[in-house]
Length: 291
Image (cartoon, rainbow, N blue to C red; front, side, top):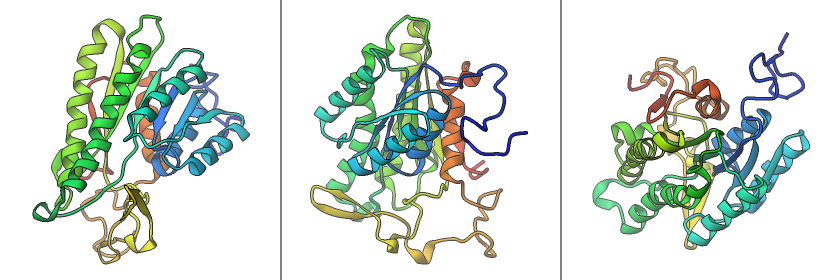
């Protein structure tokens, strides 16, 4: 009987996919040095994928790759700031080399929030968040186009990570909401352009409240550096909700936030052959919020 662990040794019997759901596939996962991206990398590797860890922090990225390789998986870290075009070019080149000339999956997950109300938002905040959450995914997909516009009978899959902020808006997050809303149009266009001839699937996953550094207490000190400026990430402690507290998470039917592993599991589900007839869709992973 399966004991609930995620190691290959203790994995459940795979009747239809005995070697793993993603065996033989090469996956680029951006922002995979921590949080949802790191969990996604671990789950993908556990299902047989060769995983390319893309992260701005080379130390974190290498740590994730090392853990995967030590557990019997296959991963390589390709660090770099994707706001710089040369790093996108290098990422795709390194991924293709790691994949012996093939790339099958892109998960556009990298990003952070830089919040302000509309009348106080600076051009720098606006431009940075739109560039990171909309322009970078486009440039990465465009760079990788030669590896997706192929007819070799192998699956090709692009998963763009969005947010409930992009679907419903969120006060103080106009830049983030705008960028994440754009992911829906990007996804649908890819599905319509590359689906008919090349069978490329493209889907958006919109997350609700997931436990990551972006939803932890801002006072914990997590930050992102933008052109030498430290940008604090997280939620002010006075606005945090705690599971079990009366009145906490009342907007979520499951009454709790999701974990990074649950979020990554949704990405794996859409990337897997179990979702082979799903494309052009936006899947909300929210615990029922905003139904």
